Image 1 (cartoon, rainbow, N blue to C red):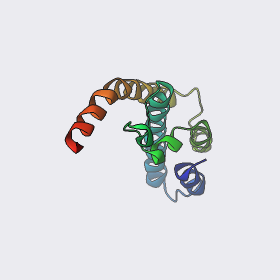
Image 2 (cartoon, rainbow, N blue to C red):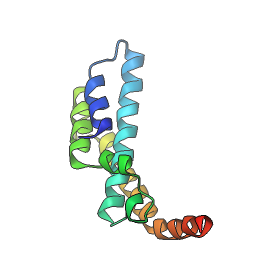
Image 3 (tube, helix red, strand yellow):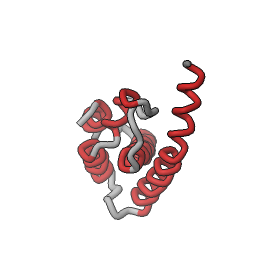
Image 4 (tube, rainbow, N blue to C red):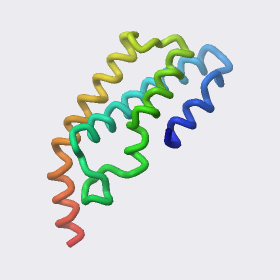
Length: 117
């Protein structure tokens, strides 16, 4: 799982009011979008910092299948099922962002390496 997965599972059911529930739902959707972005970056072959890339090790675990499953389960518990339009939209937007970031990563990594040289 990763720390993000543990946090998500620890917070499920923690909403006290309708306003808290809405905030929690939005936070979960945002976390899913970020996780989908990281997964897309990894799937596109972006390297992590230890291999000269920009993807941090802690980020990598947030995009793991286990972490995404924990988020999807948490979303289901607040009424947003996997097929829900909001869940699909978050996953698709995150994946698109991740693919775009993966395309830019080699250029950014080269610029960072040049600055540090």
